Amino acid sequence: MLDIKFIVENTDYVKESLGKKGFAPENVDKLISTYLEMNKLKTSSQALAEEKNKLSASIKSASAEERPNIIAKSREIGEELKKEQEELSKIEADFELQMLKMPNYPSKDCPVGPDESGNVVVRKVGEPRKFDFTPRDHIELMELNDWSEMERIAKVSGSRTYAIKNDLAKLELAMHMMVLDKLRDNGFTVITVPSISKERPLYGQGYLPFSRDEIYYMPADDLYLSGTAELILNSLRADEILTENELPILYAGFSPCFRREAGAAGKDTRGLVRVHQFMKTEQFVICKNDLNESEKWHKKLLAISEEVLQDLELPYQVLDICTGDMGAPKYRQYDLEAWVPSQNCYRETHSCSNITDWQARRTNLRYRDNADGKVKYAHTLNNTGIATPRALVPFIENHQNADGSVNIPAKLQPYMGGKKVIGKGK
RNA sequence: GGAUAGGUGGCCGAGUGGUCGAAGGCGCACGAUUGGAAAUCGUGUGUACCCCUAAAGGGUACCGAGGGUUCGAAUCCCUCCCUAUCCGCCA
Image 1 (cartoon, rainbow, N blue to C red):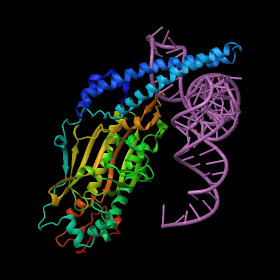
Image 2 (image 1 turned 90 degrees about the vertical axis):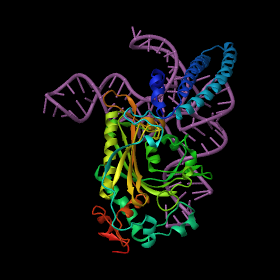
Image 3 (image 1 turned 30 degrees about the vertical axis):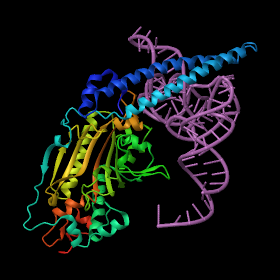
Image 4 (image 1 turned 90 degrees about the horizontal axis):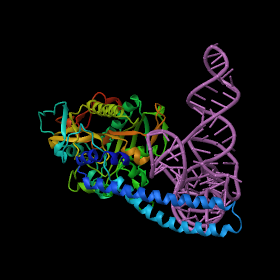
């Protein structure tokens, strides 16, 4: 959500800035006219309410003869007021919906582009490995090492699900443990959260009203399945007024995540790249309403996830996501992509975003500023810590040996019971 | 799922139709006192929005949510949500 007063006072800037995200300038004009109309109605209905309140208050001191007149007059105003309020609540709902549809302003430092073609590679770290044998893809490796039950689980749970076993199953959990420890060492509060959500957090995060198709809904209970712990963590402190001293709040949230992948039909249909249910350790930050502060945290979160990929000894690249490819909530977004040998390209493993106060306005998450005593909307940021099983794909492909076994990097070995190699060739 | 008790400001807690945005306490801020602190005393201390403005000021709404009764609702009625405890079931 944006600040309507800012929009009214800086209309040209708003149009230009949101235009970079493909947002039509007419929508800004429409929003402002709705706003002005709403205020006019507010002013008149509040004046009526004032008059009515005054009449009511005068009744107790009025004489017996006056009373019937006052009551009649008050009733009359009540009728009129009710009509105006009905009209007002309609226009307020309209205004609210328009506000909910406004994307966040992108940073002026964002590359500007229409879609993913406009993303900019910031840096590449590590060299894609040159194999002196023909490398297998991750599905072949899983079959060779008795690490999965992909065909059988499809019969049980449908497409885009996975079942992995033996050392690969342990590896999946080991990655989360490693990342949770790293985050804890960086001052994060480790927290496990539900994957079940009411509807309001979806608006708070900015999932709704944009893409209802992507999310599992359980009508019997009017509940949704969360696609990321960000959803839950973003609403955990909703409606609170924190003290500035409590900030920053750093969460390392672990949860199962659920996505319908409705918009990805036909893409990545095999294997572990894109599944309906996965596990994610999420980095989530609530900090002061100060761009220097949130940009500092944005870099910090990015650095942590780069370190994760370095610990996993995976070649990767950092993308500066352009305005057209960024989601509505985002002010700035970096993606990390790890090298996947079988696909001969980099694939996304992490997505690191500064949301500024756009989500906090939706969740009504505020804090009292020490310097001026004012109540302000906090900034929120989120980044992947590690998401599995997707991260297993570049991992086992990059670390495979000719015999199909897979090497475990030193940083991960303590979490794998000291094993240096898993699979057939051990 | 069954039964019971509840949801009031940052927290605790009073309030069963008007004088209630709401007593009292705690906390917090500022001031006095002090060599400094504690204690004590004094003052202040919700949020959102609208109008007006140079500043000031005026107003509306909010006592879990929504609806109803009434000239008037924290208070009465209805529906829903949530929390706690006990019973049942259960990883």
